[in-house]
Length: 127
Length: 364
Image (tube, rainbow over all chains, first blue to last red; front, side, top):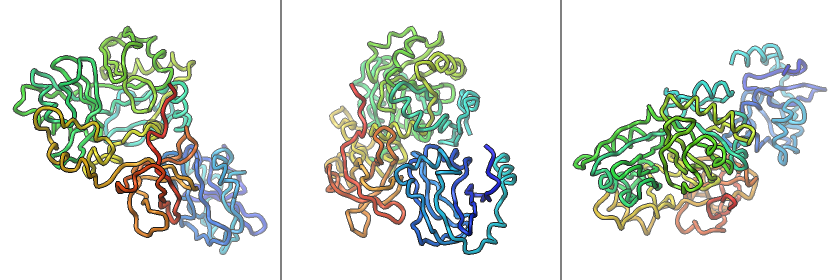
């Protein structure tokens, strides 16, 4: 697939898209494919503070637990509650309905350290 | 790192390869859940060529194995097999095994890949003084398993052995795809199925043929990921998780396997007789009733208690049952079905209840 140009991407395979000061975070299609059958997603509650590059939740397949790493810092303003009953949504639509959390960015300049779609594609092509 | 004779097949099928017990092995092809369901409803084809195949031969082979293992292979009829374990003098489990008697003076002992060298060395030592020889054929023997409700019809089309009278835990010699093979009605999935021992160089052709011909009936290649979730649902132990050098057969719920009534001493007898009625821990099945999946090493608690009383050995979200299941070691007094416990999942405590194993039993 072509990765959306309106997002930035972390080395840990999360995407982040900023609209009106609120950033939506999810995992990339590549990461979803690597994890495999997703059976459980745990994301932090509204009000939790995320720190860039630090773990903020987990995603689990039948086989293993994978940590989620925050692509940027900020406070959670919304979590994707639908994932509790339908974690497979993350695998089915990682860049859409499978989003994880929305945060209010505490330092938008952190996004400058992330990759654009072309650079992210180049990274996974080399993997 | 060893490669099985099917390495090129796995890569061509798009398998994800992982290092496992010194081998490069396929963990999944299309996906663990899909492969798991195929084995429960149709059939799956597994490459198990990493397993250890040890031949014990000679007039003293039966007596030697009786002294080396916790079971009594001397009681096996030709062509039959049983589940066994090799224990250390302290009664802890060095490996769990399948022992096949292929002739009066010939046995095939199949060991886990991770323990092949340990088992071969221990058997060599324990055979001393008996009129028996050990031949480690692991690196020239391929093993392909076909497992699932359609396994019998799929394999029957390619073998001269009549499979319908072949009983569970039996083995027969014949041909598969016109090549010499040993077919055993054994497996590690909770389904009917077969394990087919082959010469290394015959494996690729037979794998390709079985898969191609079986595709229409729902046969899919299945990896170690599905093998693990299938065996866990079936309540079968995995060495390194439920069994190890810190665990006796009695603690793992496998005391029935130990044959104290056989003649003569066997390695571990005294230690096992001392602990058989009072295991220090007991393996139980858990069903998690809250949100979260128990994983190997997670602590087990009494509800609201601060100190852990046990630990999870294996756990997953059961693809067949649709809820999280786990195996765990707990003190004997907490092993009764319906006992309420909690599993520590990261920062949370997830409620769990002890349930009988196996978690899944195939419909009969």
